[in-house]
Image (cartoon, rainbow, N blue to C red):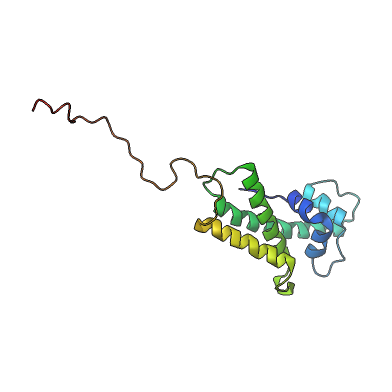
Length: 163
């Protein structure tokens, strides 16, 4: 289940922040427009090859963070029929998780808003997984209740009345 894409991360946090936190070490700061073009698959011919290679590395880092965030939220949403509002809620939490994973968590203080949003997202997913928070409805037949089907009764009060 893919809830968020690079475009969603760009919309939520902007190409400038993404370029700042994903520029590979030893490379000059990435041009946010180049990173955006790389993530969206747009034309990058205006930039030199070395900058394009750095943008490719940054895009790989972003892809790994998105994959992890999507996997975390997909585990909670598995087997549920989600409304559009519920998908947007999960996507918001997935975006917060992906953003946090792009930062070096050792540099984020306890009261940092990025860390707090990540922790809130994880707590929400834990509550959904524990069943204390609702998210979507489970499809029929997967609720864990036993299912049975039987033919009509052969022996009943009416059929045994003459015996």
